[in-house]
Length: 442
View 1: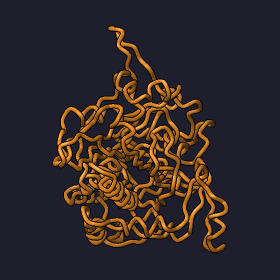
View 2: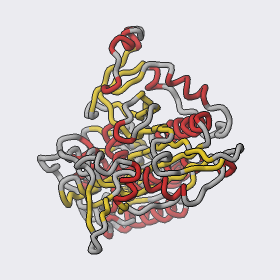
View 3: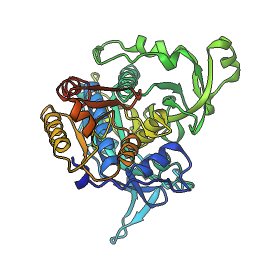
């Protein structure tokens, strides 16, 4: 993409009401624009990152055996009355009446609807287990929307729902999602710690939040420091085998959100291993048994011929919130530092003298070669001054910058900069292109 043809409304200063780094940088980098309190338009650069995060989530859900569908944003109030949650949920739910006086709501979550879909289609234990997921916009009418996409009213979420015959099967489904979450956050360059958590309005008795440590986190978190550096299990696990040891390795160490914190238990951790910090929730998983299947009559016939309510779980990832979390975890004074896996473009090309025949030719050669190699490229072919071009590239955080100017062309070299490390080096255009096309970017 040539910058001269792109839509990238960068700002020199963030609006005064942007309180945290991710909100400030997303506004300055032209990723989002506020349309109402807690509601944002996703501009081209932000949408590219959102799509890449969504794709990683989708790939890891598919790998773990979940099956994708898509549910609507509007739901019938009667479904929520079946479960008993319609009146209990509170003012965060946006309630709507259509022209036919039907009561609807803009979905804050989808337990009721997925239960209704399941009960109309699955009748026998032989069809279990099942895990159904979608990636869809949600709405919760927060009292104080703030921190940009971190605490917005409209947000993009992946929510998955498991269905099993018995408690043992439900635990296996829970473990699959636990491990899948460790992998998907790792792919995004995040160190997410699973922590015992309150089940909240979802219900149930088994729940973990996945927390990214950040100074601007919403609440205090407490854990054994080894959990922060513990590597992800990786994709080559036996998804339908025994994953309990992988889960036990993490849950055996102390980790809890502020709501679930036990000071006495934490004191049993060696002083040098205790970690108290602030955290950002990026995922939350629940196992809640028959909380929805029993009142909503989601039954299957077991091997003994008797109908039983299925055991259920739900598993959420804040897809749009993850952009903020990644920025909070990866930035410097100059701007965002995107991990290569989620960057909006793999490489930024900076033409230091637009209109100079040699510079233009070298930039065009690099641009075409990188695209041919499958890389995504943002080519700054504008006539802005060099300092402004550097500032924009650092602000938007592309992993690699290729700097091409008259002096380097005369010497037969171009400059390459690694955004994460700040390291700069010069080499021939051919060797720089060879290095970039063999990198992990893209």
